[in-house]
Image 1 (tube, one colour):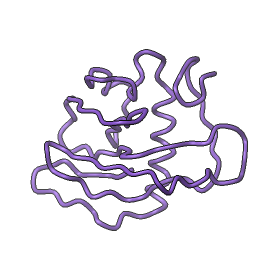
Image 2 (tube, helix red, strand yellow):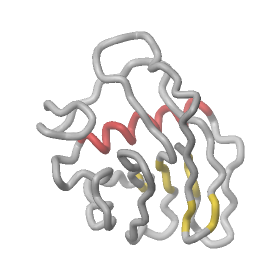
Image 3 (cartoon, rainbow, N blue to C red):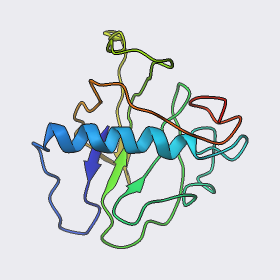
Length: 140
């Protein structure tokens, strides 16, 4: 997952703070869990649900269930982006980190320009509440 400043001429921070990235990754998972099927952003092929439940300080974009996606949405001016090029989570109560997926890859483009990616995630378990039938926990 990566934060990106979409403002014209704004520079992407090549060395974001790992603690901030972990916090954003946690918030992103919780954002996804706030959506019910079929209006969840991961399964949204067009981007029409991209604006649902967005926080005021960052704009989350969705990943996919595998494969690629090309979506369109309007992001408020000056809002930094955060999104996964590849993501996975481990459901259940555990203090063990999710197993690494060494063969997994991801890439991202924004308006046709490749985006530099940074690893982000939470080494600690965190609670996630969501709507029934969400793609993260399935249950509330």
